[in-house]
Length: 501
Image (cartoon, one colour):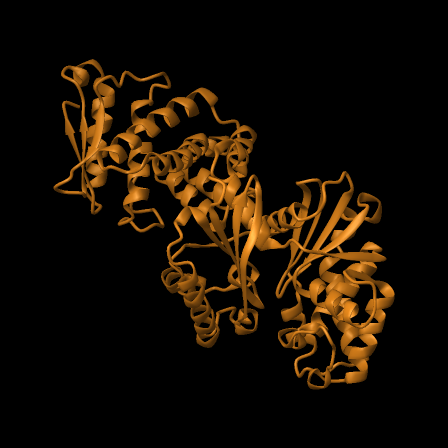
């Protein structure tokens, strides 16, 4: 990316939606604009874990306003991520279908550990360089992330289903603060967080930082009341808890430095924060300037090159762990990329877009046989399952699923795929991968001199595979498999035509 490029990150949290816009300047991102709206989607999950129509509408309205601000941005300049509420929501596809349209950019629902990793990146990028061992905490609306790391490297990451919105709704439902309510809420939070004690014990970190949400709100209140700015300690937490008990209800809260959108969730947030302080033996916590959205911005830059894209490392780790045949991976990946590029160049697609799609095609090639580690029978199905359920840093849930569908679809019938078969980009990646697997079936470098794959300009749903004269006679088994492939595509909106094959 060029210096001066504008980048945008959207964080669709359980309590608020946030938009951060920054300008790239020699590896650093300088803020140019920040927008935040209290949407409270976390309050809009019903007992069946479906978002209510009202909660969805609040989200769509906010995203439409953010989308207007992002008019003119290219897709590579923007990334939107959604967290725990949409991880939980059973009807999230209904919300996302319209949300992607009104925003104008795709929204990635990210796994809890990926959220934790990005939070740490955001915090670390805005802190001075140091060799200190850091504990980073983010108490969000419906989840709490804990991370141990040094420098820019997050080493231990976890996400727990406890947060300010969820706990306020459950233990302070009428906005009333009582001693019993706080006691029960803290006990319940400790029950969820108790498994963190060993991994995040006091001797594993030097300094504790809190990001965004509850920690930021508590630090603001304490600072305005005369406590040390940007610092939360046990005495301050005790004082704040006492003030809530004195007020008795949300309506009677009067704190300088407290924003109105925090009043309804402050009880649950403080309960969780006190539980964390007790469990991990924290005496002091610094309020960090960085947050999830900043981590997303820097990750957006890293994704532009394979050597800095964490997803590439995650794929390589999976391939190694499941014993993928490195030579077969190489030959299938190289040929699939070559065939894909032939189609894309014929259609006039810019080289940088081709390169990004080829990287994802290489990932599918690296993983297409990992299911063999479990069973050779239906290994493509085992491989797809592994990918869908893998802990793969750098990936959103939708990205993993798309990758799993390439692996699932690299052989066999196409009707089993859980994708829109009208998605031309996916179909071209899938066709290139399937053809590469066929042509490499002998597990040696294939003779593909004169083999050309193009897409018809007059009939975009038709693909033509051209082979040189005599190729089919020289390689009868490959020719037979290609004829079988033609039949496989006849039951889809697409068709494959062979010429000389």
